[in-house]
Length: 159
Image (cartoon, rainbow, N blue to C red; front, side, top):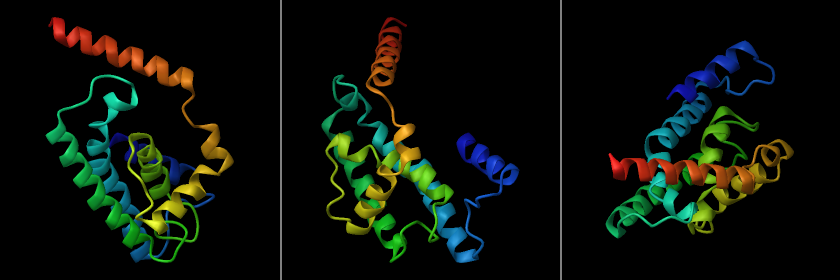
């Protein structure tokens, strides 16, 4: 939730270009996407973190439950996109910043976006943005992250 507060601060401090829609309905959609991502999608995808890092997987029941949650969220996002290129607007919004950082990883955990054509096109629009590519995790950063997670797991076992 702190990340949402930081994004709001940055939007207020640097209002140009506007990253939140002015229309009330569009603003509500953007906020909904942010909150559903943080409260539903992100927790479900963290179930797959060991898989992404090449570590032992979570229990199969937990994985299936996470897949069901992810599917529900993706259906919602597909419907919210309607015929617009971005959530709540014709322009990139904070919803893309938040949801994009999670949805972009779904193909990495073998969750296809092919059943969600609007969301898949949205994903592709984000992935081709130069600024998006510039902030993508490098293999070196992923290895460093994996080392941190492995160290924490070992520490938890010994405590």
